Length: 275
Ligand code: NAD
Image (cartoon, rainbow, N blue to C red):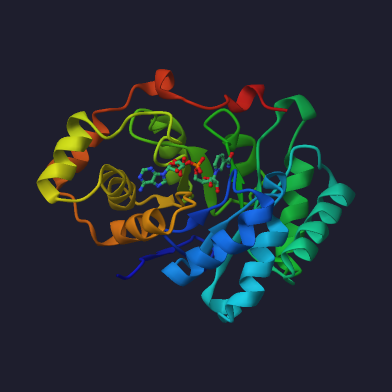
């Protein structure tokens, strides 16, 4: 199977299907990420708060895969803001990862309670100019928080937001698209908290003889979103990667689009309340 590369507005590109490591036990991360790399994943999404950057770094080092074939994302946690602290946090992440640069560095949450993110954001742009990260973006900056970032004139390449069939974030998606910002869908499968195996998705899966998870991932890919489902099992790693070969008809995509419940579909935290 071939994983599509999506062009980012800064001239770089990102594998559209990757592997996320939220809630992957730090003690198991090296093994699990090594298995994901063996399965064929080349894009790994981690974050400082996951506590497993070191394991990701060890798996990268052990893989023997050329650095330029890998796409590594990490994220600045909420307790690090401002010029000095943002720089320090980035340095610490690079050290834990054993890398001299990441491909993508994100502000993890807007944290309105911590004041404006602008100084942090411009610091990230400076670190990009210095080559510590190839690209910069934001996470959980929905339509309430994205304008302040975009008004700096430094436009994120991605906005990583909770997005799955019952919570499609239409307003954040439209605003991001207006600025050429790609959407990364976190919790793309509903984090195991929603039963997507029945109803419309279950029917499509049965007709195409694929799994419900492959249908949901194929829907994200057909909609132009970047995804990095998390799984600790080799079988599901392979299954999720193979979703790149599943083609949905326009009618099937539209049928899943119709499952959106708006704000009622959210399963995780509201960014306005995260500090
Ligand atoms: P997910 O939607 O990827 O769901 C993961 C769950 O689905 C796991 O319990 C797993 O066992 C199950 N699963 C995986 N593959 C399956 C399959 N083929 N069939 C059935 N079940 C399957 O949720 P996630 O891990 O929260 O999100 C993916 C990634 O997004 C994370 O690992 C992380 O990298 C990122 N993320 C970012 C934020 C953020 O605030 N930026 C928040 C959460 C997650």
